[in-house]
Image (cartoon, rainbow, N blue to C red; front, top):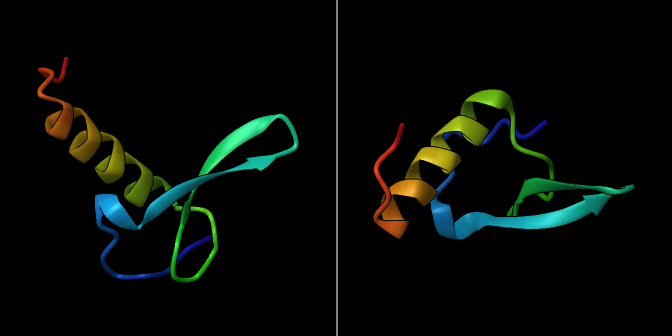
Length: 53
C-alpha cells in the first residue's frame, strides 16, 4: 500500500493485478490505500463535472 502523504489526480495510473484494474501511484508504484482511493474517486468525479451522489 502507498504511504505517500499527497496523491494528486495526475499522479495515478492504472495497472492490472490479475484480472482486476487497480489504481497505483506513479512515483512509488504501489497501490493506493482506501483513503487515497476515495479521494482520487472524488477528485475524478469533480474534474469530469458530475454531481457526486
